[in-house]
Image 1 (cartoon, rainbow, N blue to C red):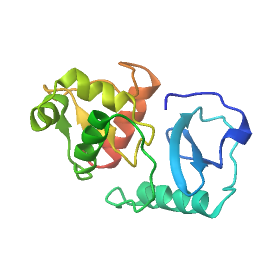
Image 2 (image 1 turned 135 degrees about the vertical axis):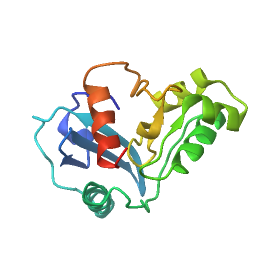
Image 3 (image 1 turned 180 degrees about the horizontal axis):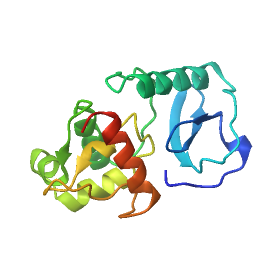
Image 4 (image 1 turned 30 degrees about the horizontal axis):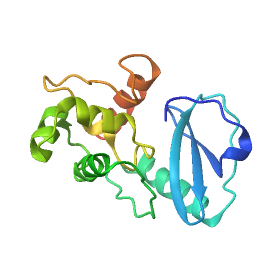
Length: 162
């Protein structure tokens, strides 16, 4: 999910946003990955009907941060990661929860919640950007504690009015 350089044929679409180009991967009828790519990455029109629908829904979110996604997802992950991701999907737009709050809810540890966030292959749709440090700081994002990933997290939270 962190800015990767991939071959164009790896993606079914590349969508421009104010903070990154989003590379979309789709397998059969499932969205499997959204990756943040550098802003200068060439765009790619959707290759499939599902890629077109994902792009439309992401654009709807960029217009209205309260937009609720309705997509077929293939999230994979461990049982613990899926529990964390479900808890994160319950955080409404404009809201945040701390890693510790989610850990307490799931009888887990904050670090394990952070690791699950880092393994999230569907950022924005599974909104790990809404998970912050206990003291109200940003915490990490996409397995990073500074740089462009935190700029993206900051943009997404500001977009949602946080």
